[in-house]
Image (cartoon, rainbow, N blue to C red):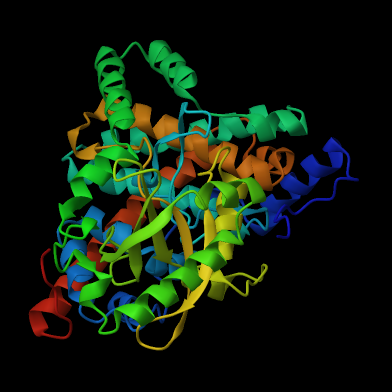
Length: 467
């Protein structure tokens, strides 16, 4: 994978800083404080419908139903809409490996291979190289949208956005002064989170974090195994819950063909793993597969849960194979292109995250409809703690914004040039204030787009369903 950083290792820190400051000519920091729909802006419903054209048609109404639950739910499903809005704006040209969908719910507690809890980005479906500010803007706007959903005042929303962007800027300046390997090894583990909370003197935050940490440690593959499977006459099988969970045996007519195709897919996936992890995977046998509906923006893409068993029926491994389509950023960037979109997701995740799932890999198959499709594969659930912004008061949302902003800076510093980005951002709060204006303007646009989808359903142009 080509490194997305826009600098050469032969440049001195002073030259890299000059490169960052020169980027202000292309995109003054104050220019980020403006957003207005471009003339000829694509209809947001058309953009979403174009995505839906490659998805399972019977599941698309569920996607729209989930997006219409609230403006924040719409925002989660509208990464393609925002990508089209960001592309025409003044760009810094300071390239990093983007998450591509950096809203606040894609930051969470995760388990490292060493069984430690870390705070990191979790979703990489849209990852691609691009200008760092695209991720920062999507994250910043998500706090304005979430604050509105909670009924917070404009000032309280702005406080959260500023806290996020300020944490990003300050931590990027820290990374600019660090050794390269120290940047690569940096983690946001539970100790760092507790230090931040202690400095905030927010007692409720400490209590809530302790609860979230404890919950995360209970969200294991064994919990998912008990929840998603049952004992049948044929042994352990995935429990049907259509249309959200549909066993593959209920979608195909020929069990023999099904088993052969699945084994070929798993064999190809195994080849994407390192040799010791292939050895681990061989300790398990394939038992069952089911199609699963996940998330909001991902609804309609093909997603499979795979049940494997090791020593006996109480020794499970649950994998999730999720379809990887072209990133929503791809039409607007000139970065590396991949022959397998699952490989793109895995490569981006490994570059951004400090620790990734040991069974993270990719594969390719021909779908039930006869079309070739790419997938990335990971464990279904392993110590995941998910934020609940709807339960946060303004102070807690502001603290969470600091965590997310600092985490995003660490992710970007791994692939981009922290010296150049820090020099561009500067020591003052000009960029922070600009992003606050942008976040409010884009939250307004998001509400208009949410209403447009609602109107499309009302008119019968598209159909929505709840599930």
